Amino acid sequence: MSGLRGDMIRLLAELEAGGVAFIVVGGVAAVLQAVPIATIDVDVVHLRTEDNIARLLAVLAKLDAHFWPDPGQRRLAPRATDLAGEGHLLLQTSLGRLDVLCQLAAGRGYEELLPHTDSIDELGLHLRVLDLPTLALVKTEAGRAKDRLVVPLIIATHEERKRRS
Image 1 (cartoon, helix red, strand yellow):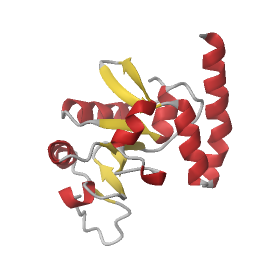
Image 2 (tube, rainbow, N blue to C red):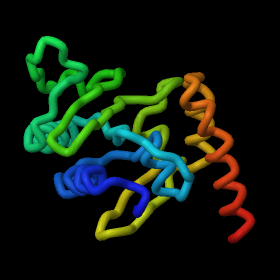
Image 3 (tube, rainbow, N blue to C red):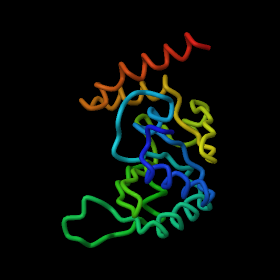
């Protein structure tokens, strides 16, 4: 996890310590699997059950999470109904930016993504991260320029890992 900033590691540790069921996706998932990129936020897909949403809300409250950008400086906190939906919650926390994604493209929520994850145990954390082939697929489907730029690095890293094992 040496490619992650300390605040990102602490943010993941808070989610894990809070008992939240989540999958790390996006740039952090890539970094955790040795893809040589930089990222500015933590992206997770959470299990959308009532109990898990309650645990996630408790962690978000502890971290003073609020929606961003926040031009009106209202510091609106996410609600259970926000976390139970299908959208993306872009949040600022005391430990940095956290994007809580209810689901990815094509209706891929926690349950659909779970079979496409790898387990990573480092620095006392046990994390589920989106596997590299699926990460490349969702980045390709997103179609954003920043995603198209990292897909070749994700694929190359995956190929190198396959060659070494």
